[in-house]
Amino acid sequence: MEITVQWIRTSWTKESRGGEAAARRNAAPVGFALPHAVAPFAHVIRMDERNGFEPYDSREEVGKADVQLREADGRLRVFPRVKPLFSLPPRPRRPPAVRILPGQWVRWQLNYRFSSALGIRGWSYWLDTFNIAYGPVNADVFLSEPTVFVDERGPVR
Image (cartoon, rainbow, N blue to C red; front, top):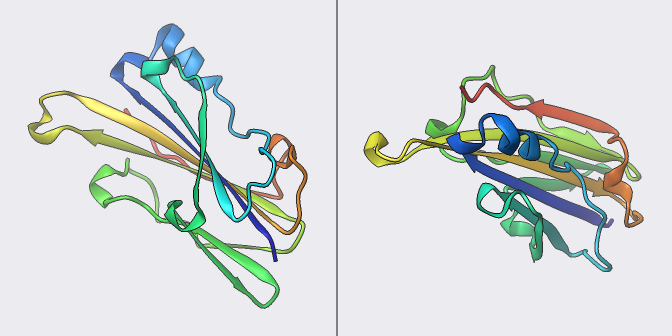
């Protein structure tokens, strides 16, 4: 069965924690139209503070996306991998994996907070949004409401 992956990473520093820069960051889309023939690749979008949160898209092998995907019993199991625990903001226990049926899609968001070695440069942050569809889709599938939404974002202080 066809699996479509869109991985959006938005990154910023303390400079975008308030004011106009934060407004631009918060207005960044959480879903984009798909380019033609994405599968079997992941549609990867990067937006960062240095470029005013303008999206830059590319394609990568699905296996390089930070998400575990497994098909079993007519369903797709979706579970994002997390970077080392020192980068996670405080949050309750991680939710379980999501299993979706053909024709469904999931949006899963989680964020990270990092400090430089010895804390010299201050904090940096990123938000990962995974949009994953199971089965054939049209180009604007991720512009609509997901079948399942998992909000795993924690406070970044």
